[in-house]
Amino acid sequence: MEWADTGIVLSVRAHGETSAILEALTREHGRHAGLIRGGRSRKLRPLLQPGNTVALLWRARLSEHLGNFAVESSRARAGALIDMPQALAGLNAFTSIVRAVLPEREPHGSVYEAAEILLNAMAKGDFLHWAPIYVRWEAGLLEELGFGLDLSECAATGINDDLTFVSPRTGRAVSTSAAKPYEGRLLALPPFLLGSQNASCSVRDILDGLKLTEHFLVQRLFEPHGQSLPYARSRLRDLISRESK
Image 1: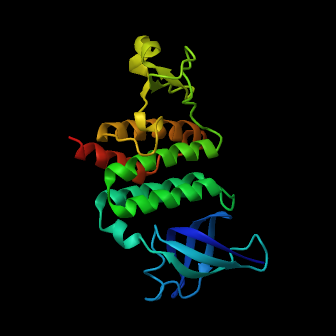
Image 2: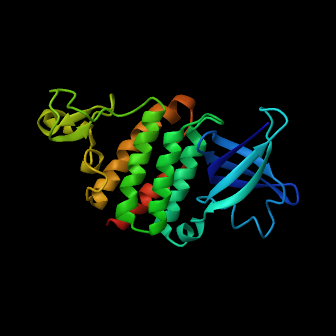
Image 3: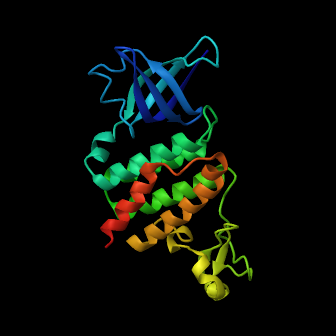
């Protein structure tokens, strides 16, 4: 059996003296692993860095086998990401979330396409540009897995303007007026999750967005399986929080 696809490198671990096992988020085959012979060589090590996009050819005798990858460069961005602390933290959060919540070999093309947009933005280094995209990516991941937020109208009144909060129980938006009696128990809804992708935002908005998606990642994906939020994701939030003071 064999297939060809593109994939974003998530992790690489040594296997034997010269080989490596690559785990990638692929466009058509989901989160997928394979053995790369000679993967620890000087030639391949720079290619097999998290955040890079690679062209993959997977071969195996049976579909359930680990299989072997042949790999070629498609888009190298790891070097730029490693040189920027915020972007590196974002990359580590991204890879840790994908590895924790996406089932192996289950296609999620929209998650992959959004990840390409996110990582390309990260590589440019403008934090206030890529951080909202990261929050949107997590919100899209929740939706793809069946736990999307409903930000279309107020859960209490049905109006679709002045939406400023989200119910931590239902994931539905709440307007400012309807939220007043419960404001301390609701999650802030940053404007960039309602507007266009070019909407400006502050660091406070980004932190509100990270807190919002984190709550539902934990509530709906991690806690039901007895898991905790990955450390890399918590570190991203903490890093941004410290830099905002």
